[in-house]
Length: 472
Image (cartoon, rainbow, N blue to C red):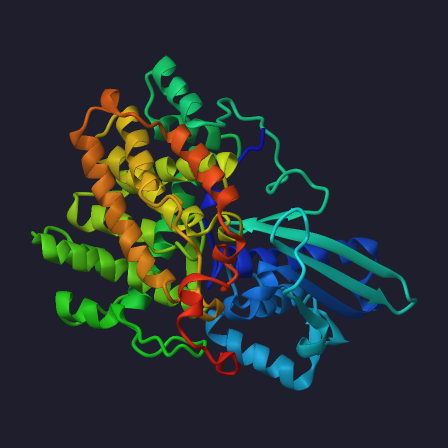
């Protein structure tokens, strides 16, 4: 059984896509590390990259080529200077020289050495890419990787996206199994999850790392709420979060991005204002994501705004505190893990139900737990949220994570809050559909879905809006 940590589900990285940006970025880093195992990087004279399937069809809009180059240069998505990404890539295009692994200069022409094979999909997964390195003595190393959703990467012939096997005290493969642990030991869901997390981290480290996730989310919301302009890519999508924030809050708080939630604590909101605030938070995150900003994959980048929006709603307007933040993230993270094991987090496999649908279910469960819900109510909330995302297609216009992706995060967040309220007001004993049943249904729906609705930009809205990709 694969062991997935909450911190595998929540990863700090760079937009716009976990499967098309983060995954290929990490794959490139792994390939460089593999090259080092074979000998000094100084012996490598050339590198080429082949992108297949969905990575080729929407790779330019998702920044797959940019991510691959950054990974090959040993830039890291957690720590890199996001403000300098475009300038650095422009310089590489101009000079056609790359510092492989951040240390060895090699000739590299992005237009020739990154090849998009939109007419070919590798059998294991739609998001496949192959790296080739040629040494000065003519030796050649080639390796294939698959970006399987949520930033997880699988090397060809490798069975696990994390490389970890289950040594956890309470291995979890399904919602029913999670529920049984809770019932047998009289524990809540986050109590079970924390016990598993201790296999990797101390309690203090778990709390510290969860706080870091929340801080990154807060910073992302703050930047999105204080940045105007037009998103890159050629669609000329105007940012909206900042103007909405000013109308709701007044002047933006001048801080580092961490203390702004305190200025909203204690406010009594009308229903309309609640909708506006939640939408503002979600828009802020995904406008940052679309701009190659730093976000938390939750569980994907295309759906990165749902959980921060619901978490900010809970913290600012629902009486949340630091303990509640940990409770929310531990609960939501485990639900995301169950979805990954039972279905997929990849829109290239399952459409947008695998992204917005899963993030909404995670957020619904996390919020329900924080508001005092029982184990059954938490699982019920997650089921309700996913049930009403089943069949949601992925049809990004121009291959960009903008239309309809950004607004879908607002809808996913609102659905999560609604699902939590329904679960808290209901009796799970009367529920006719279990979370495991809806996950199974989601996966079957994914298998039945036409490929053109799986992050290929070959169906849906992507065909209704003319895009001049030369402008992207």
